[in-house]
Amino acid sequence: MPYNECMEYLIVPILAAGVMVGLYLRKKNQPKMKLTPLARGLLWAGLILQGLYAAFWLMFGLEEITSSIAGGVVHLVPALSAILILWFARSLPLEGGLVLSVEGLLLGLYTTLVIDPGANRLPAILFAAAPALLSGLLLLWASALALQSASQK
Image (cartoon, rainbow, N blue to C red; front, side, top):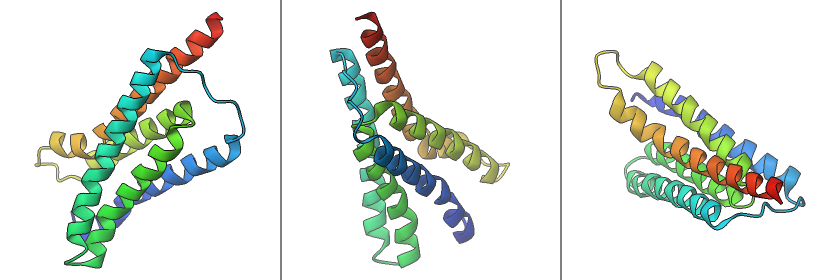
């Protein structure tokens, strides 16, 4: 990806992290969601996947920063965004799931539009969008189970 497209790619993770921090600051004093054991497992699966995604970007960012600052920033910003979302999604799984799902969809759409038409788009979309989308869906599923359990009581 050319340098300008890399910088454009950073807009979505930055916005997603900003939205998540804003939601957390707005809702931090509200009661926490009561999770069933299955919901807790799904929550942790989504958080672990998001953590692995952040670790992947951190690995490349720290390696790349030794050769160029711009290259390192392109990799470190998504890592820091993923870590922020991960941190606050622990407390707000429904909101975290929504933010991650929308982020994954937007990254998938952007990747589809930017990649050269002759290139195979599937690996790039899976790499860029799938972790956020899958993490988001797991968090949403956990939230749905928790809300369903709460409404039955």
